[in-house]
Length: 168
Image (cartoon, rainbow, N blue to C red; front, top):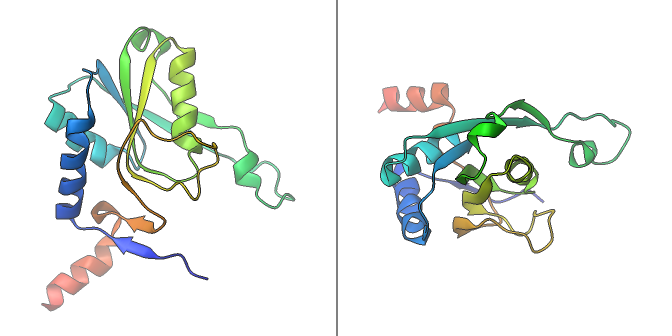
């Protein structure tokens, strides 16, 4: 059975950002954008919130145990890029990604921020509770719940998209 797909427009993303904004009851000191998915929505949120201190976190999950059925789900995170701990200590930080599917990536970032002495809050455009690996854990802020595979406008194949525009 193929997973349902939902292709979003920039207007759809604007509505999701508009839905998130009133949810923020505290003032954040900084934002951490999880690469790559959190870069665009995080930038949009930072602009709307007039937040200027923005960090990035890049996390990978190497498949170390190839003989296992789901090796990527059991791998420890590898932090490729992460802000220095002293920049996070005592700060209220909004961690932004596009989707909370399994929750592994954003949870890894949240835990590392906590270990560094920061106060993490998680935020995504879409939360998929059906793929969540963390029980009842969920993002602190999210705009929509879904069971679909979401395709954001910044993920659309540019060659195909350009070819279609040229044919009009």
